[in-house]
Image (tube, rainbow, N blue to C red; front, side, top):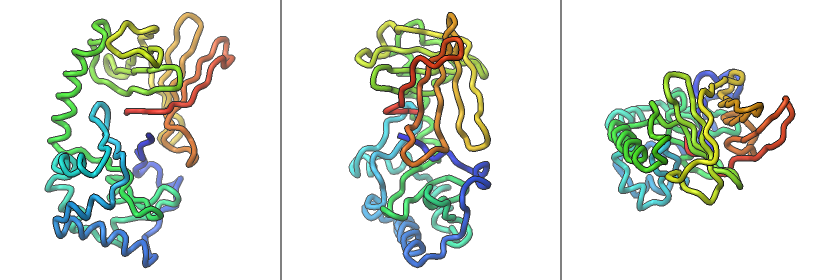
Length: 251
């Protein structure tokens, strides 16, 4: 599942225009009115499930979960911004990416009339995230428990991959076959990886080198509509020997 992590840096790359089509104005107005009227039941109808949440917080899979976790998603600050927003100034049409609010705080998809991304974290959700990080630390294989922060977990058809930041800008790669869990001995661990930005579109790579092999985890933020969220590639002597699209990505 891909996250719209596109903010101001992408403005030169995407069509940025005020929304002016009557159906778009009505769509955004109806969405905003859910907050003005505190109508959570109506708001549910605007949510595209599953709604991604940052790793390791579980995604929200249905309307029941959304209502239970509503106060984790929306706090007084965000609700106030939405309620007081100016349809013509604070909401922008960004081409096929959809309609963006407040420089990427959230994204709406006008064709299906749904909220597709929420790039905002309340204090409650931040606290939940930290609690889950500590719980997970006790679950994963003992030799992997020392890290500054977890970065991502992704799965291809064959592999499960975990990347952690060990110290500032130093990353560790661990992988298992897809049928294993992260509390089992990993098949491969590579320390001292690095993160490399790829242009101004937000795409980036995590690069790990081990015994003549280079493992490249490419995170695709700005791609085509049918692009996978990420790709795993392996090289030896600059020759690619493996390339697999990522099926699921928690980031």
